[in-house]
Length: 214
Image (tube, rainbow, N blue to C red; front, side, top):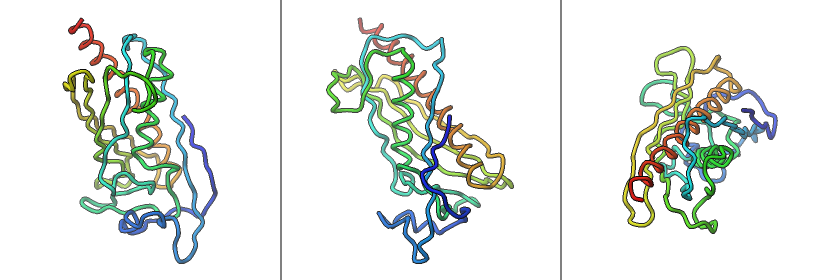
């Protein structure tokens, strides 16, 4: 797993959470602070226990509240308070990071013949839909933050729109320090863990249903 650093900047400090709602101008401040953009590249080794499947899957981009599905890096310095790190951000909103991680993990696993986003020309037997609830750095009363990702996933059989399986995933990865690179590294680990857990669960749940309906 590695992060591509797209642009160098000043060290990140906290900025008000209201910046999350500022639309396309969130990276522009009156002081014209330079911005560092982090692009996590997550590579997950497939688990040999994952089943090899013959059905096709569409991965739907996660839904999320606007404050969660943002390109800003959110932080909770204290319970009930959300801020963002100033001068830094993700290369794409958090929902897109989750979608890309799950797609790449499944594509590279060699366990499924066809997986794609909806509308990419495959006749999907199942759809993976997700609701992203949290994607933030949380101090939780500690001196060091942890990267926290929480989402609910549902696997839906396309033919009859039946929910085959549903599960809420929570991944927490502690950062080694409070600086931005350490926080980003914690998010990388969390994304990798989440991608692996989601991929394994999706393959196992879909295959159990497919065998039961044959």
